Length: 111
Length: 115
Image (cartoon, rainbow over all chains, first blue to last red; front, side, top):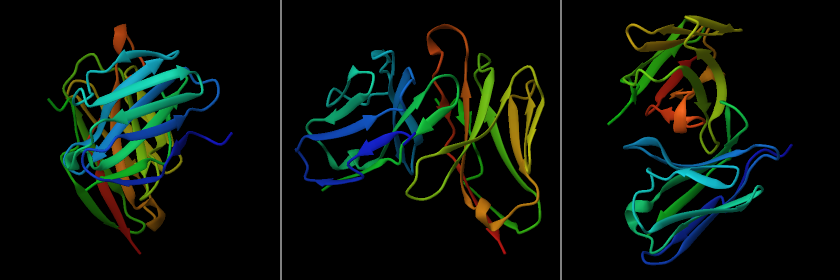
């Protein structure tokens, strides 16, 4: 199995632009999680899905952030408009039970 | 509100000695605890876990201890090796209700093992 796949690995954009991060979970996993890692706050859970349905989005910082999971093999996290304080590493993870498997992350820089 | 806390941002240890990483939690509903290791430019990877019905779990050089009354867990690495140098995250979950599947992470501890 290829593991959790995230794209792009790096994204540099200008303030105000729309950013879309993509994730392909491990086949057979029914949970999908989006996290953000910053020096100040560590690993924060933004939103998670179970069987493609959003379960808890209380970690989504603002309305500028949205996430979708149209099918079991694909999810997106969108930031519109982006701001410099959104600069961070964004991880996607999937699980079947308690152990979550993480992707390599997307390093986002908003100038 | 930080429900899982790792109060030591960093730890430096000599190769061959014991590394002890600590984690405290505040939510009494947490009943499953995990440690993840993260290398630069990679995602966190699962290391070891423990259920609240146990107070110790061992896997090779790694042992996790759980003290439920103190709401404290620790990860022991013996002997420490330079390849263990990484960021270690403590995480916790509550098996019941709508929180099932959700992990709450601490802020991480950077472990450096010197040759």
